[in-house]
Length: 195
Image (cartoon, rainbow, N blue to C red; front, side):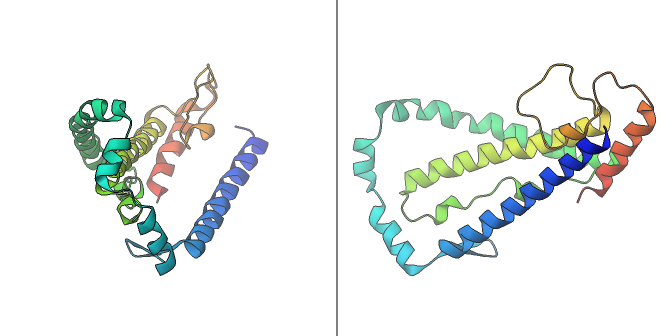
């Protein structure tokens, strides 16, 4: 990868970090504060949330019928999700120390905090918890797979692909065989420093 691309990627990463920090500060100061694992709203916001909460029976009557009909299908997916979680976590737990790869912190990806929202009834909170788990699990798994790909085959594809992970842009260009083994080792060593 040439120096100008490396510099642009570094600037992009710095801007993403800056944006993430600014958005987090704005959200925290306006609506809520995070104290440890708890999220606390101002009293006025909490009171406004409670007024917006839809009673369960009203929610049930006004809910789209297709949502109720497909609910069992959606929620039956919890079993493959949990099995996937178990397998991917076991893989990381057992193999990453052998490869010298820093483990992915599960709690950075699977976050349960929507139950603090008082404008949601208990069914809506249940829906949110399921989505938090499923989407968080996919992000957690994607990062584990990204680190695995960086360890074994940090090479870009010949075809352009959508939805690449954050490590991908730093991978070797497709067909660039110069000093492959030496550069592969650099990628592997970097994974041990990834904290």
